[in-house]
Image (tube, rainbow, N blue to C red; front, side):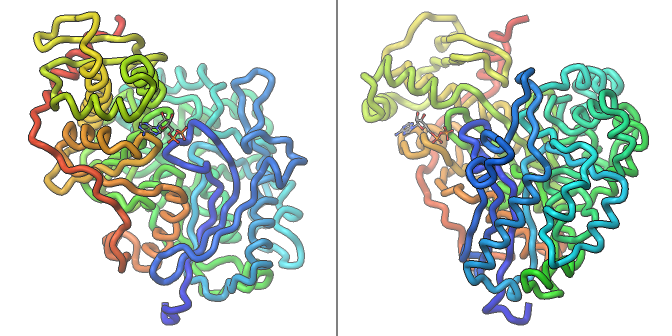
Amino acid sequence: MKKRKKQTNGVLSNMVASVLKRCENLQLKVKILATDHNLQMMKEVSVHFDSELPQYNTKGGAIMQNDRITVTAPTEMWVQALDLALDKMKQSGFDFSTVVAVSGTGQQHGSVYWKNGSHAILRRLDAKMTLHEQVKHCFSIKDSPIWMDSSTYAECRYLEKCVGGAQQLADITGSRAYERFTANQIRKVFCRQREAYEKTERISLVSSFAASMLLGDYAPIDYSDGSGMNLLNLKLKTWDKTCLLSVADNLEEKLGIPVPSSTDLGYISSYFCQRYGFNSNCKVIAFTGDNPASLAGCRLQKGDIVVSLGTSDTLILWLDEPHPSTEGHIFINPIDDDAFMALLCFKNGSLTRERFRDKYAGGSWENFSKALQMTKPTNNGNIGIYFDVQEIIPESVGDHRFDGKDKKVVEFSNDEEIRSLVEGQFMAKRFHAEQLGHKLTPQSRVLATGGASANPEILQVLSDVFQAPVYTLDTSNSACLGCAYRANHGVMGGHKTAFADIFRQPPNYKLAAKPRPADYDIKRYGRLENAIIPL
Ligand code: ADP
């Protein structure tokens, strides 16, 4: 920290290209990014799995099995990509000796199974050899289950039954059972590959796996990524005993003790000092999942909300008091252990907006925007709820229109149709955010990203519905940058320092809309939405 001018923070990430839009356009890669003392990006290299490591035959960094529900990634490929990324950084002339701290992120939910005896190998890595050469035989399960997997339906129902139901599991862990969540993946290994499970001495998440490489030791799982497992008790911040017992034998000892996301894990392994020239004082700060890292990268604060308007729409919320539900996910907040964050995904985003553009605005976004200008906030009481494909939140489909007296109607005027769609989509977001415990405060900001955030009229409606200013921000690299920020936060004392205090320059948010006076009845919206959910 003394050599302030030369200070850099490194970040390692095995990430989905854009975390807020993780469902589409996956370009899985390992990326290394370094920031300078002002936390501005100064160097970036990456290794693209499909094109640069074609021998693993991955598509989008993953392998889908013949059953089309089992999706994995070769664990060994991640290690080899890390070797290549570090080599690229070295070849570019990057001075590793200036790095003060390293942190990182990994795709959430994926798991790595370390074979008995691997710890000893990690502890004495030989700097003359690549990591890949030394750890490639360390995995009892060679292909890591990842977030795209949906093969654990039976395991999910079993876990929910063991704890008393889906809501009970959400109350404990922040989410009902999901097929990609790690508890259910571990149970599948336990039930179907018992011998491999017995031979496993440690289970890591993708994030703690990458941290283990840097540390030359098993790195603990952090609270925030640990919240995406259906195993961590959100209130106690420990593995939940009932969940542990329901998943597999001797699981607690294989998981290690979870830690706060800003934990200083110790010094970087001597392997990296000898092979790449890192300073032996370089710290490793706990790694976390991609969504929590993105929250850090967006510099979210109490009361803020990120709205990503892409093919599907996603919300990331800051929560002080969580109200878990069977919809969405609640995680422990990566930059404040006493707070929480939530993630909500709505399938019907831009595709439905495009349908309305084509039907009611002659296929032009300009006309679509004009319709929003020509109509008034709250749309004379007309509310529309439109789901082209089966929605996740709520589980419903079809077009539903209500007039000011809550009477079902067939159609509004063309301009009102457009306003009813945009208002309906944003009222749904506010309603579900509030259901999970989000509270708008006078300081709340809505941070908008994604393709539709280019449209000022759509953002004006967003601002009116949330009664908060809307800012746009560039989220490319948000997860990676978030970890460079977290690395800095970790060396500055972690949770003892306010995250906002680590920045010397103001965030690059652009004010896009200020709220106009408007009285949106969010409770009424909720009643109408509940009325359309099939029994
Ligand atoms: P993805 O989730 O596929 O990465 P993007 O975040 O890039 O999507 O958003 C793409 C979407 O943005 C397009 O499907 C399009 O409907 C929408 N879009 C682009 N420009 C506008 C605009 N001016 N107004 C509203 N929506 C827009």
